[in-house]
Length: 206
Image 1 (cartoon, helix red, strand yellow):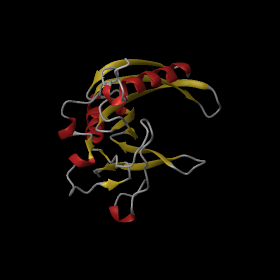
Image 2 (image 1 turned 135 degrees about the horizontal axis):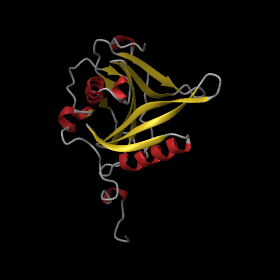
Image 3 (image 1 turned 90 degrees about the vertical axis):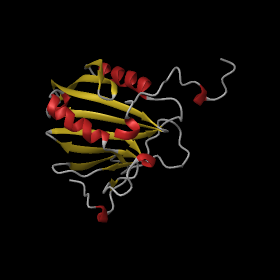
């Protein structure tokens, strides 16, 4: 271990997790995307508009910082968050375990399965009613892709969590996302800044 001088030299413990065709079929890095496509620019990610797609930005109350992008499509929801990552090692294998632990502490359960993008978590998450009572379980899929110097996390709920036809539409939507890492130095796991779209982009939040 004493020979290792840089975290980027130890990808064996934290290999990247991504489809083999990621660089061509997505999710794409900004350098891989077609610059003439009419993307909605949200800062850390760009989203390709499509009929029936509604965009929501999730904002942190105290800071008013945009912390996630919510996409409503095909009777499902897809929440995406882009994070900075090391150049040669990945984050998804470690983060996946942490998500499973967190859901377990909440009284839910998870199972790892092989999905379109590689390993994913199928989770049963407890839902608290308006009266504060724990009631039903909500099914969700946690997916992740390690790209060049970034990691993109997705949470799928609604029909696409269980129905194959809806799942295919949401997975195609996830593939269409472009991550804009930028050149600003950032520690691994930091959220890549997100922002409201410019009015001229034609993609107003729903």
